[in-house]
Length: 171
Image (cartoon, rainbow, N blue to C red; front, side):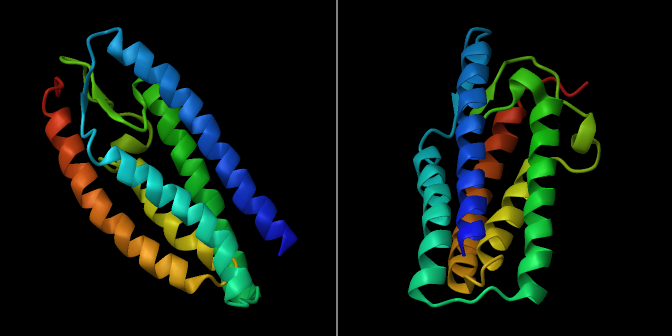
């Protein structure tokens, strides 16, 4: 279990790094007349991701969940691939990437990196991570409940983001 705690703590540390990058990028975007959209759902997203990390640590202990190698190792690979995809998205978008939805009017849509293949590749990473991280240590209740909650949140988030991106130049 101790290595799993380290994994969850590493994911938490990665989230802190994301927030630092997001804060810097938000200042950059707002200084260029960026407009924020979807403020109302952002706190829900923060709660969901915080709950994910907490429940990943709580459920295996309280539920006496064992590490099942046939499940745990493949899910660890999914978590690592999700992190790689997330950082590919972050580096591709550069200063335009954010945890909030901030669009600079007239900015061109990015069609490089993973955005050549999928409109919202970061959310592919998020879905994979929310489902897989708990399953690394058999926290199936966390995976089930938070994956369902995440899907509902992403429906709202993606609609918001698509509407906001409509203000961008598509050329």
